[in-house]
Image (cartoon, rainbow, N blue to C red; front, side, top):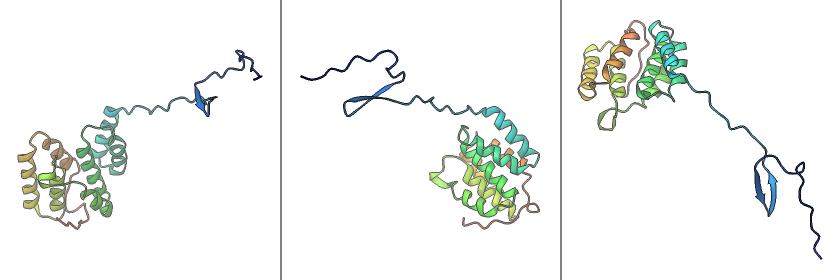
Length: 168
């Protein structure tokens, strides 16, 4: 005759969720769901912009990188990181990032054209820089003022930046 187990008492019942394993109920360990701290996008954007405007490019880069996953303007923020890298003379890292900004029919934003403009400006080819910016403005007229502002805030000039080799 099969033996019957007594019904569990209140003290012996697990207090958390139950899972079944091989026909036996096993209590799941209780864990609080991990919650990410909400990113205050406006505050972070304001800090990044201020650091960028004042020339503290290392701090601006950190703020822009923290902002990147949360912002709606990822391409612009990526371009601002690119400018921060240039201003810090991190040319190898800037070159790698520049390759991530497409130009031509595959481009969905003006970042690649503004990268071309920044490189041309650094190398003293002002006419090529203007040409790239004009092309961007004709294709993406609504977003380009933000890119123009980023270039102006970076005070991009050939005196302050090391030349970057361009495969474009």
